Length: 383
Image (cartoon, rainbow, N blue to C red; front, side):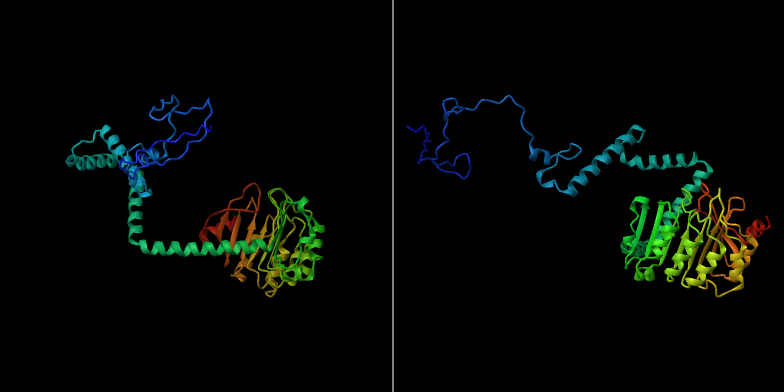
């Protein structure tokens, strides 16, 4: 006989909508002789195991332990509970410091405490506080303009990020020698850079010059060498001229630690690449380059040479500052960065030194130190 148990239900008893009183005649699952079946009418023994975590009760408790009704468990209610707890903590801390419990006396206590704090300040602290208050007032007065400027900056940042992504797709970077692959020189790329871990020499520049003609025609920017790790000294005039002659549409050409690139090569580059606006040839504090006054004189004598040039960087080269001043006056639109550790590295614009740079570990990458007046620039020239 099947051991199926059937619950007897009193059909005359009133029915309710609760799950405890609404029952139907359903068979219980089959139980063996050793099962934990509890007959009808016998209460279940209490378990000795700890109760499981109640999710609903946890949802009704705030993060600080305060009691929150079930309908008040939204994000705003939780924030209000946290703010209230912080306020209570602040009040308790102030009461420990001597604040009266009477709300009518608290305002006077705060005013006295503020006056005592101001009296104990040093003059510099008072000036800082005054500037801070003035800045706060100015920001409050120009709130609309500040918000508009922030929106404009955000738009510019988004555009710059988009342009950077486009540029990244159009660039070829070689960080180390193991990554060298001339097959990457294909049309659509406009920027080639051999990073600080790449020991560049003329053979790499010859590979760029021998690439696909469309690639050479589209190439706009080439940057090789590194002053920080002193890589780039193997590049000679032959490699530099090969790139310039094969890529006449270059707009920027950089030879970091190019201590073998000469005046004649730079002059030929400027004649070949008529659209060039940036030419950088740097040395190192421990090893200067071979650029001399011949390049400066050629630019002074021939106004058509490098007529589109906007930036000329000749750091750690053997050039005379007086001639650089003449060139800066003759070409006011040209920015010239020159100098070394002995005479300071400066930026010339319109015949005057407008910026002094800090020299870090003999490198050619500098941070702006500050602007100086024409009087200061004349003193530096005299020195």
